[in-house]
Image 1 (cartoon, rainbow, N blue to C red):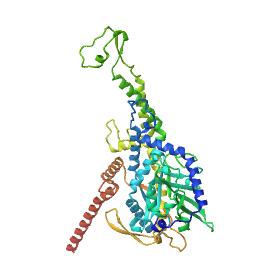
Image 2 (image 1 turned 90 degrees about the horizontal axis):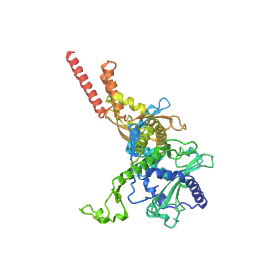
Image 3 (image 1 turned 135 degrees about the vertical axis):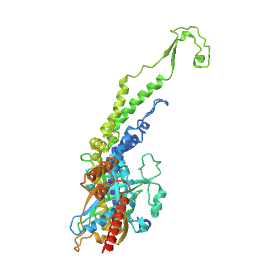
Image 4 (image 1 turned 90 degrees about the vertical axis):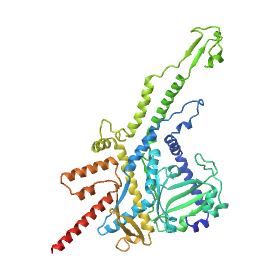
Length: 528
């Protein structure tokens, strides 16, 4: 929001406010079970799920084996090894230059917005909760008020979609909300000091002093029948901002809710999906329960207890004091004193516990091969890669799904660029051979050559920015084999390879070629 919006309150349309809160309450109630499930999943991921159970005794063990945590982080590592990079191509002949420029600009924006961190957060959220949310918006505060595209991850617990629609873009509305102190709200909306009313919404684990602020996104046709996307900010049953007043043409021309919602394991008829924790949390809790039984038995076995006959009249205080050398008793025989030892556990309990832990690894696809533990003396990169590829089918499917979401995000970024880059902007881009270049991008470049034909259409695909170490080693080994066989030249071999510092190696090779050409030219000139 800019300063003008902050200092001026819109007209308080009570009917509109009531409708917004009515929809919010409906969506909030319909998704209550989902939010409870997401909170439980977070507790399990943090190895804190015992906190929901009351201890029978203060000394009762509550062990947690972090196998599910390790499984999620291992899958996250697989995803980050295949971090996506956009490839933007023109659909029509003659637009290749614009597409290449746009591709460089989008990559520059992703790097400046630290999108790798955002991507990691959303991938972890999807693995834990089953659904991730990313917001693509025009940030007016960037570059001293000039503004630019920004991307942020948003917690699914604080995002509401229409529960009656599988595709949230087809829903009646969507809400992005959060909880903030009154001072925080008044700092951004100083006119609201007399408008805010108390509400009953409280965050999970919060103090109750926060106010719930929502962004109400909805679509509506204007008087000409054109669909428009609008957004209203509400807090304390007060309307703080309404885009319909300041931007009647709509928040974004693409008329889509500016969010990308991705499901790890989609569910039919629902906008939210299942995560790894949903699938495996029962195994984790049962394994921890078995571990608790084993620990209880170990603690009981390690604590010496004795049965004493009442008629033996043993000095119990002296019996408990191991420093006493003499203990007096009326009767001293096997019938008077007896050590009490708990029965050992059935070995099947420990075996079953181990099987539960292995089942989590097997069912998640994170076997010893996918974790790089080839075993059996397998050391060749090609052999390790073959074993990994055979075992990471589920990871490949998850990565492919995330690429679909990344494509949708890039298309939305392109739309926001085309709508807001009214003035020419210059970007300094580092090329493949470390050559600094200046790239120009503006909304005019994105429009079609013919007047009134709208925007240039682009095709968006995804490539892996950096391959996994074993895949890179396999690719490098293949390039060397082709070079030895005489199929390719040294330059082609270097271009095929993947390693850190490749750009410098290519630049050095080009420099040597240029020096050799210059020397040859000089020798030829001397002969002439």
